[in-house]
Length: 490
Image 1 (tube, rainbow, N blue to C red):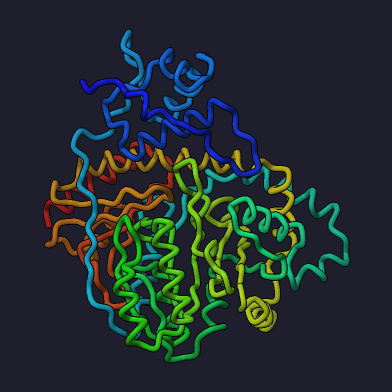
Image 2: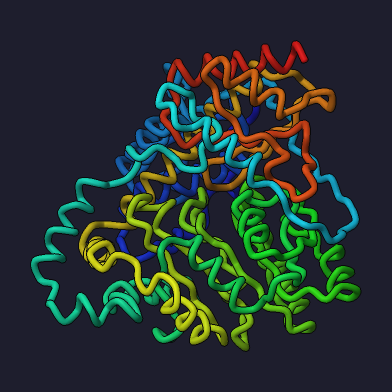
C-alpha cells in the first residue's frame, strides 16, 4: 500500500467559480477530484484522513465528510472499514496513452460526405448502443427547467422585441454571454457578438467571411468530420496539421505551412478537441496567436466544449490573447445546456460586421423564443450548478469506459484521457480496419465513429472515436466486451 498523501499535495487555494456560489465542501471535493484526475492521487492510494484534511485545509470535519460523500457518489473514492477512504481502482492495468502520428502537411480536396452520412445513418435506431454519437444523453440536460424558462420569457416578450431581436439577437442573452466572457478574463463589447443557429452556422459564416472557393484552410488532423463537410461544400482545400493527443496542434508544422502556403484561415479547437480531446496549454495558445498574428491569418476558434472541463479552472481560449480582432470565437449551448434549441454565437472580432451581414443574407435569425428561454435560464436557472453536475457525470462515465476498455480491448490498444468532454479516441492494433469494425459492430447493435471520417485523406484507419456521454449500464459494458472480441478476431 502506498503511503498516505503528504501535506504539500493538499489543495492550497479554493477554485474560482463562475457566477453560482459553490459550497465549501464542493470546492474541496473538486480539488481532490483534480488530484485524482491528474494522477497525483493514484488508484488504490489513501486520501487524507478526515482529521488530517480538516487540520491542514482549515475546514470542519463535517465539511470533509460531505466532500468525501460527494466523491463517493461520483465513483472516485471508496471507504474501507477501519481504514479510511481510498481512490477507486477503476482498472488495475490501464491502457497506454494514444500517440501522435505526425505527417508533413499537404493540400487536398475534401470528399468525405458519403462516408460520414453512412456512419450518421447508423444512429437512427434507438436500440443501437450510441458510442458513435456526437451528442451526450439528452437526459443530462435540464429540459423541464428550460421549458419553464421558455414559458416565462414568452409571457414578458414584447411584440416589438419579436422583430427587433431578429437581427442582433436577444439583448439579455448577449449580455449573459458577454458576462461569462468577462468572468473568464475576456472583455468583449456587445456589438462583437452575433447570435447564430448553433455553432455550425457560426463556423460556416466565419469561413465564408474570410475565404473564396479554391482557398486553402488549415485544419486539424484528425478533425471533426463536420469541418471536412463544410470545406467540401464551400469547395475549399484542406491543409491538415497534426494534433498531438494531449498537447494539441503541432505548431512547427503549422509555422512551416504558413511560411510556404497561401493559407487564408485556420479552423482549430484549442481545448477539448474533437475527436482527440486534446487541450493546448496557455503557453501554446499564446504562441499560436502570435504565429497567426505575424502572418495575419485569421483563426476560427471552435470552442463548443468549453464548459465541459473536469478540473477546477476553465481553459482559456486563444481569443483571450487576441489584441486586434483576428480570432473569431464560436460557442454554443448545444453541448452544455440545450441541444435542440440550436442557439450559438460568434465573437467575430474585426469580422463581426461582415459576419452579421452575411447572416442577414441567409438565415436572418435563430428562434427568438429559444434565445429568450436560454437568457432567462442563465439569469435564474442555476446554470453553473447544472454544469458542475454535468461535468461530474461525464467524468465518472469516462472512468467507467476507460476501465471497461482496459478489461476488454487488446493490450496493444492505446487510448486518450481527455481532461473534459465525452469522447475517447482509441488506437487499435495496426491490423484493425475501423471501417470494417464499424460494420461488424453495427451488426451487433453497436455504433462507433471510425477514424477515416475525421480526415480529408482517409487516415487513422485503425482508430475510432467512442462516446461516453450516455449513462453507463450493463448494455454499455456488454457492448465494450463485444467490441473487444471483434477487434481481437481481426
